[in-house]
Length: 198
Image (cartoon, rainbow, N blue to C red; front, side):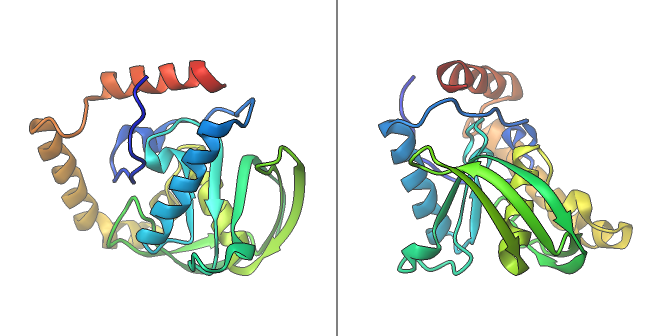
């Protein structure tokens, strides 16, 4: 398959609802993709990015809670992440690079334990709290095809409905102009990518 530039897809692009598949290996191409994901995350002023937000079907996400590309020590790559424990609850406002201009309060676990692999293929078990815990829960949701707006209260969903409908109209228009492929083409491409790596 031809390589393509990594870029964020916007709601309601079908890849955002795709259940991500675990990766079996890390190679040069995947490292390059991860580097591009981090770069895009910083350009878009994000603190986290999941693979399906850049139209890839892999169980992979990147996080830097500072949002600062100079803070390399805060850059984390999570390959095949799984949240194994949740503790407490906390509510805070969230946004999403795939849902520009949309924000809402989401209740999540205050502390989590996450297991994943890093770029060296080493297994990690991290205990996280605060923004880091919220970010990994948000990104793991993405990998399950879940968006933060799915977790809003009914009044919260009502408050963002108009903006979501704007994004839906924008995607319809992009498809009409041939900028974004249809669902069948997206599904076929994701299946081809999965067959190469999962």
